[in-house]
Each structure stands twice: as C-alpha cells, then as structure tokens.
Length: 87
Image (cartoon, rainbow, N blue to C red; front, side):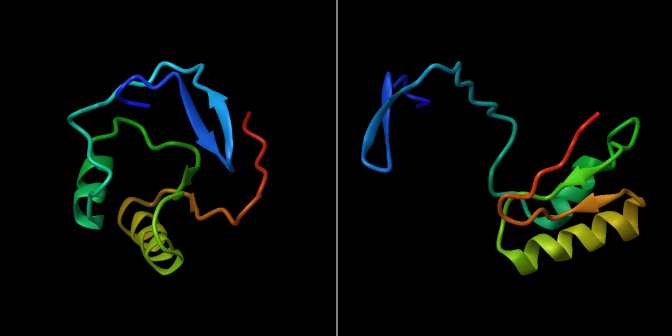
C-alpha cells in the first residue's frame, strides 16, 4: 500500500485501497519499551486512556504495567473484538 497499490488481497479477495497511506519516517514499528516510554514522556498532557495494541500478549501487558507505574496513565491491552466507547 505504501508503494501505491490500488488493490490489496484480503482473505483471497481483491479489495480497493481507498485510503491515503503516508509513511512517517521518524517513527518505527520496531521500538523497544524504553524508547516507547521516552517518547510518551514528551506528551504535554496524558491521554484519558492508552491502548496497547501491538506485540505479544506478555510484552503488551508488561508495557501496560510500565506505563501505569512510570507515567501514572490509565492503560489497557484490549482483547480480540473488545469494544470501547470513546467520548
């Protein structure tokens, strides 16, 4: 998609790409927990709720604990198909 694909295959079906896809070069999908905590410390205001949605369950839960302990933020690791009302 980043290369400009007009269609992608999902579960064997061609699906049109109707999104603008932008690469933020200054961010990496391969950040470690220390880098993530350092980045979060730069927020001027804590979010009301932070969701951890990437990584293996044990690593996600460990990061959730760190965010809660070190930053004092409310943080969750949602389960598959969890629904949360944001208001």
